[in-house]
Structure formats: C-alpha cells, structure tokens
Amino acid sequence: MIAQLRAQLEEKEKQLARKDQALALAEVKIQSLEERLRLERIARYGKRSETLSDLQLELLDLEPGVSSEEIEAESNREPITTSADGENTDEEKPVTKPRRKHPGRQTLPAHLERIDQIVVCTAEDCKCGRCGRQTEVIGYEETEVLDVKPAEYFVRVIKREKRACKQCEEQGVRTAAAVERIAPKSLLSDNVIIDLLVNKYCEATPLYRQQVVLRRDAGVEVALSTLDDAVIRVGELLIPITAAMKRELLSGTYIQADETPVGVQTHDKRGRNHQAYMWQYGSPGKGVVFDFRMGRDHEGPKLFLGEFQGILQTDGYKAYDKVSGRKIVHAGCLAHARRKFVDAVKVNAKDLEAARVVTLMDQLFAIDREARDNNFSHAERHALRQQRAPKLLEELRSQLLAIKKTALPKSAAGQAANYTLMLWQKLTLFLEYPVLELSNNLAENSMRPIALGRKNWLHLGSKEAGPKIAAIFSVVESCRRLNIPIRKYFIDVLPGLANRSIQTINQLTPTAYAANRAK
Image 1 (spheres, rainbow, N blue to C red):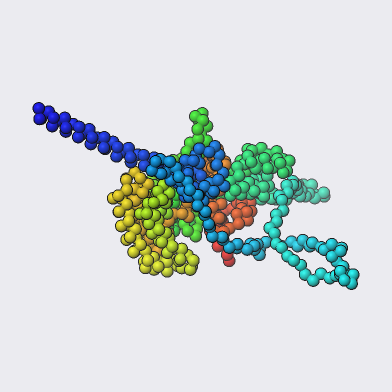
Image 2 (cartoon, rainbow, N blue to C red):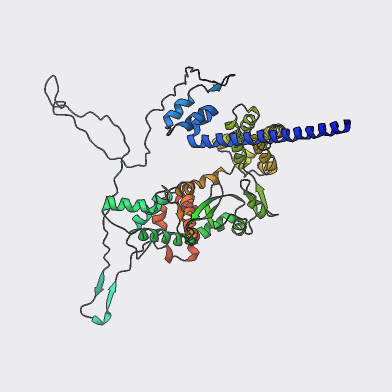
C-alpha cells in the first residue's frame, strides 16, 4: 500500500515537473513573441514610437489610420500603466521641452551662378517726399533664393556635311564623321539618356514614370522598350570599367562587403520573381563594385575575391566564413552587434544591462569620431584606440557574460549577447589593424539606393540584365562616395566609350577620374 502511494506521488511530481517545464517554455515563448510584436509595431509607427509603452502601441493598432502627428502627440504623453485592479491609468503631466536656437538663414554655395533680379521702387518712392527731386539708388537690400531652370525638351537635328567636287565626279562623296553618342541608333540624345540614369539610379524613379514625364512635359510618346534599351546599353558600356574597378579593389588590403536581395523576372510562368542578390564590395575612400548573383551562397564572394589577401569586413552572415582562409583576415561589424542591443532596449526600456552595453559601444565609436574630427591618420587613430579601447572592451565583455547568464536565450538581450560573444574575436580586430573601421556601415549605406529603388522599380527584367545593372550601380555609388558629379562623369566618359582601347579603361574608373580632377 505504501509503495503504491509512493509511486502515485512520484508520478504526480513528474507531472508537476512537466507542467512547470511547459510553463517555463510558454513564458519564454510569450516573451519572445511580445518582443517581436513590439519591434514590428515600432518599425510600423517610426522612431518616435520607441518611447511608447506596449499599451500605447496597442491603442495605435486599434486606430484605422494613424498619422505621424498623432504618434508624436502620443509620445509626449506619460506612458499608460496598468493598476493593480487591471484598469489603465493615464494621468497627463505637462511636458516641457527646451527650445532649440534657430540656426539662422542658410547661405547658398558660392560656386552657383548668381543672376540679378532688380526690383525697382515705385514712381512715388523715386521722388523725395520733401523737395520733390528724383532720388538716387544708393544700394540694394539683397535676398538670395535658390532657383532652377525647368527642363526644356527640343529636337536636335544632326546634319553631317556631304561634300563632292563638281568637276571630279570620280572622287565620290565624302561625309563628315558621325558624332560620338552613347547609343548611336537610339532616338534619345546623350543628355536624355543620362537623365534616365540619374533619375532611376540616384532618385529611384522607374522608367515607366519617366515615360509619363516625357509625355506630360514634352508631348512625346517614347516606347518603354526604347528607354530600357538605352539604360541597358549604358550597362554594357560600363562593364569593362567595373572590371577595372574590381582590379583596383582587389589590389588593396581592405574590403568591406555586404549583400541585399533583388527580384528578377524569370518568365517561367510561376508568376513569382526569383530572389537574386547584389553583393557589394568596397573600401573606405575608394570605389564600390556590385556583383550580381542569382543566389546567396558562398560561391559569390569566393569567385569575386579570388586570390585577395587582406582584411574582409562583413556582418555575421556565415557564407563569408567559407571564403576566409590563411590569406584573408575576417573582421566583424560592431554596429550590427550594437543594433541588436538597441532592439533589446526598445522592447524593454528598463533593461539597464542592455542599455549599458549600448553606452559602452557608443564610447568606442566616440574614439573614432574624435579621430575623424581631428583628421587623425590611421597611425594616430590606432594610438588613441590603444589608449582608451582596452578598458572599455574589458567592461563590455564582462557585461555580455553577465547578460548571457541571466537573460533568456531566446530573448532579444540574450540573442544579442550570444551574437556578440560569438563574434568577439572578429569585433576586436581593430586593436591589431589600424586601417580597420569599427563597423561595416559604409557598405550598408551603399546598399540604400538598391533598397529604395526596388520599392519603385520592383525587379530586374531578366537574369542577363543583372550584371549590366550592377555595373551602373557600381559607377553611380562610387561617384557618390568620391564626391564626383555624376552627370559630368557620364557626359565625359560614356560618349565614344565603345571605341576606346582596353589600355585606356583604367584611366576612366571613378577613382582615376577623381584623381585627374584633383590635379
């Protein structure tokens, strides 16, 4: 009898243990889901919603449409809390914010042409109110405003002379050489083609919208295929230049890399785009090369980097690990790690440990900011890092280990701590290599034109178009980084590019172009 009761008791204890375990797992899952929900709400309502409580965010979800003004007004209120009896309490308190000092009227750049517009006084003001004599101009009250000349479309008629001798018919007819053009057989001039490129790849305006603009402003109906052919033609012309840019990049010792998805039409009747990728490789102070690949596996960076020897800085994507060998030093991105802790603070503003990690990382970035503000060389920045960073890193690692012990593994803070500790060696290589940046943000920023563009032009028309579009992005983004006027670069380089010798291509890369402009 006692043995039977003891067996029943043991069974009950096992059941309780299983229920406790299930309850603990449920609590972990609920916390994880709540954190994900909060991050999604913050992403939906914008940066100002980060200060809102979960209940305030829930109230915004119940509204059919919420404006940015409503979100700002809600963020200025005291957070809604829940009382002991379950009722929401929302006591308003006046919020006072310090007023910012107005910076004053902005001055316009000196290199812009100045065109005077003289505003004359009325006839009454031109006479002296006392003696009636004509007054004299003694000066002007000046106001500068930024103005623009609207685009004016016209038809350029290219007439090539045809000459012949009336006395010597056997000499035949001689015609003037054809003008070098970007697309010799196109209906569009070089300036119109460059406009298409700048509007699409700098302003993210798709070609079909530009087609509408031509119809509206010029009364011209240009086929979409004509616009597309002109853009693809430019991509073909730029491929040799991007090949030279790639050689420039691989000859260096430091590359930052990143990748982003792009949709590609496959025409296989599935009705869905194939998810391809643009891989971006660049280096601070140099150009950028985009490499189009149909997949995201390690073959992409492996084929691009080839025999590269030096530092490769990326995020935590594992495909890059498979190209790291004895020739490559693989560095991590501190900004990615910081971002994960920022998310942890967003989901739990009372998480002081995660907030402390963000503060310590900010202090590391402050070291580089000080060096940048003082125009330090890499050697001088390295000395500053050696002086201040080790102590910060020691405290940061201790904080990470403490979070790992106390935070739930699936929580935002737990995942952030595990991610950072896993990449710790890669994240601290900046202490060994003076040239290495703390973050891969420069590479990420180069992806923004694609991220913005794919929301407008949606996808690439074909797999074959991918390398050509990658070539255009490479040149456009390199010019942006190197402060080269993109229109001037295109007008100087594109006409006649197809007839240039391969030996001169190296002098046409954005880096070489910028160096020639600086002479």
